[in-house]
Amino acid sequence: MKISVSRDSLLSTLQLVSRAVSTRTTLPSLSGILAIVNSGGATLRATDMELALTRGVDEVKAEREGTL
Image (cartoon, rainbow, N blue to C red):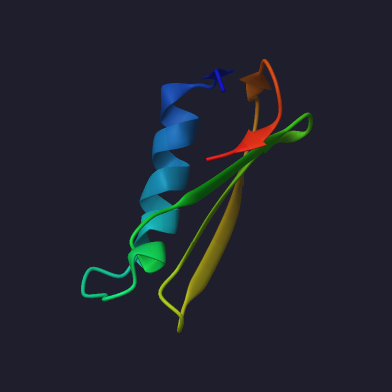
């Protein structure tokens, strides 16, 4: 998947969503950020099972839809 997005837009969204990523987890699925890209833009999600954050990223151009 190849996307184009402004650095500032992506950085501010990643900084916000990364607050929900657990730093002391035994479950690997809780140590990352899920990126969902579709024709309407991108959504970033993270959780530590107590706190979940979801935030959209505007002005994303993608060659095809996908999840990372």
